[in-house]
Length: 128
Image 1: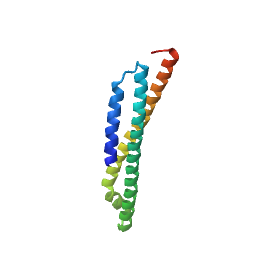
Image 2: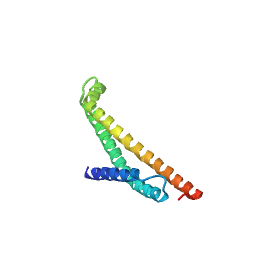
Image 3: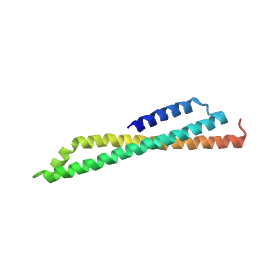
Image 4: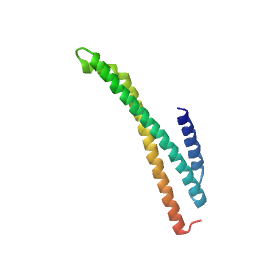
């Protein structure tokens, strides 16, 4: 979890630095692109970690369900579902985090592509 905290600090720092730069200056735009490229790397690492957290919890929930199902007498499926109710709620929270970070990765990557396109257009038009 210490790695995640470091990654989050870096994402916040890089994002703040990038947001402080103007978009109307090619030099600043290049710096912003570099900062966001680094930010994407850290967002990807966080996204990967929360994806893994979700998958591990899912596997554990399936295992606990199977154990509860196996040990129950009569109404096995209902007993197993009741046994893993809290795990399903936790799984929903993990899924929400997973999707949030996937979306952050996609949106930051799209923003990065838009800035690169703008830089290319500015250079073609001779904007200084």
